[in-house]
Length: 242
Image (cartoon, rainbow, N blue to C red; front, side):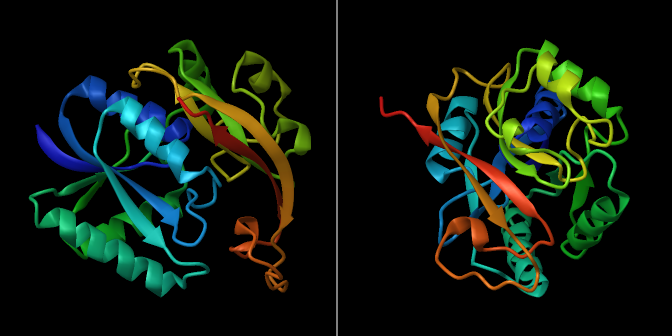
């Protein structure tokens, strides 16, 4: 099998892509790589607590590699950190990096160009597949996920905290990509065929944060650590103690 790393977000696209890879049995996934906020210990952009991420990965049964990202890094800083991480994996004989991207051409090219700098190659199991069919397949396979972040440009507060099911698919507005490939929403997968058992959690507070580019963060709240020209609704998930 070919040694690889898997760029893991904890969401539905990552989960379905990993399912494809594990079924194919061509790639040996040596680690799930996730970017985590250094200051807030949450998955970048998704806002999921790292302890829930760790429970999720433990239930999958693959090694976890944490990329600790400082608050508000420049693109140059991020690229340097990712290059160093890839060089670490390359030194272990790993030459392939797997992603759950579906159709964003500029993002695909960016990933390929960055990996080429360290003589690694990108793999995209879901590339150019129909996103509605992918979401339906995700549900039919028995995956279970909850919406943890929605972009207010596309979805209202009511979608934060919803489960991904056929009712969710039916309620999505026409201008929203079914898989949220344009950043309309992000999810956390808590059960499915890639997991040995479900992640135990409860729904916490739903909060709104506005990321206007000209606005500076006024406090130490995790949800104001990145600049965007829109607002987001976040649903906090809280792990249950065993």
